[in-house]
Figure 1 (cartoon, chains in turn cyan, orange):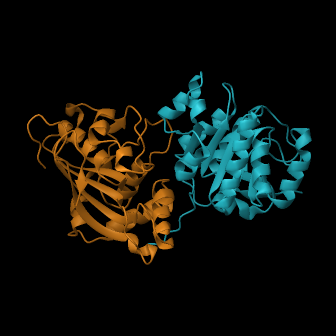
Figure 2 (cartoon, rainbow over the protein chains, first blue to last red):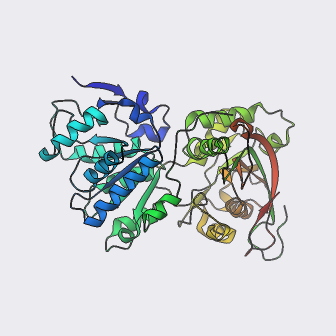
Figure 3 (cartoon, rainbow over the protein chains, first blue to last red):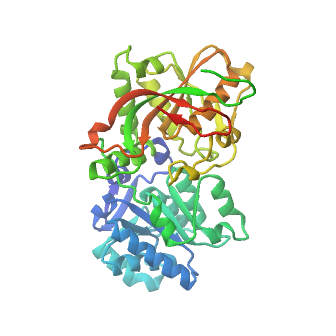
Length: 222
Length: 225
C-alpha cells in the first residue's frame, strides 16, 4: 500500500561515503518532490525539550521555509514536533524520517501529525510496512536523516541523546553540523568531540542565518 | 621557490586552478557558480569531480596548468580543517583520485594530516576570521619521515578543493619541502575564490590559470596573484 523508491533514485548521484550506510530503498507517503528540493535542513534534538528549545526549533523551521528550503526531522515529541509544526505554520514544506514503518504510529499521540504529513508533506521510512520495530531502528534512521539532509542543526540534546548518531554521520558525510554554544560548553564529552571533527557552534538564530545553511544542489553548469 | 634563513614557511608557491568563483556572489549566475563549488566540489559529488579531472586532462600538455600538474606528478591531498575520522569524507583525496583516473598525476600519496582543528576557511567572513599560515603549519603534520619517501626528487603537487588566500597551501607545501628538499613542489586547486568576480553566466567559471602565492614572513598573511 505504500510506495517505495531506491535511495539513489531519490537522492541522485552519491559519492562512496554516502553509499556506505545507504538504505537500498525508502518507503514513502506524500509528495516525493520534497526530497528533491533544497536546501533540506534537519532540525533535531531532545524529546524533553525546554521552552526555549521548542521556540528555537520553530523559528529555525520558519527560517528554512523562508529561503524555500525543506525542514527534515524525526517524529518524536519535543524538538522534532516543534520543527514540523514551525514549518507547517509558516506554510512551508517538511519531511519526517521515521524509525518505524509507515504503518506504525510512534508515539501514538503523534498519529494525527504523521497522517497529516503523509497527506500534505512527505514521510520516509527505510523499514518495510509490518516489520518489527527495534531500538536500533532509531540509530539507523538517524544516519538516514543525515544523508537526506544538506545540514543538521541540533537544537538541544542530553548526554545520552540518540541525536549523537546523526551528528557523527553528518560529520562523516562532510555535511554541515551545527550545535548550540551552550551544548558545546555543557558538562559532557560528546559535543566537544564533535567540535574536534568539524561541528560548528551557534549561540543564536542570527549566527545560523549568517552561515551557509543554504546549500542547494549544484548542476554542472560549466 | 625560496626559503630564507630560519624561516619554516615557504616564501612562494605556484598554484594552478581550473575554475573561478565569487566568494561574495552578487547575481544569480554568481550564486550558481558558488553552489557548484560548495555542494558539487566540496561535497565530492562524483560527476563534478569527474568533470574537473576530464577538463584538466583535456588541456594541451603545454598549457601552463598542465605543466604544473603533469602526468607523472605525485598528488598529495590537502588535509581538511579538522582531524579526519575513520571512514569520513575527505574531498581533496577524492579529487586527487579522480585526477589520477583521468591520467593527470601518477599516484596519490596522503602524506599530510591535520592534528588539531582550525577554523574553516569556508565559513570565514573576513580576513580576521581566517587562520594564518603559521597556524595551519603547526596543526598539520606529515605521516612519514623524510626517509620514508620513495622518490625525494619527484614532482609533488598538493591538491585542494578551493584556494582563497593560500594560507593552507603554503603551510602544507612547507611541510613537503622539509620532507623532500630536492623535490619540485606545486599546488592545484579545483577552484580559486575571488571576492567579487561577476559572471553573466555561471559557465564562465571555467578559467584555467596559474598564480603564485607569496608570503613575506612566517608570521604574515599570504597574497596571491
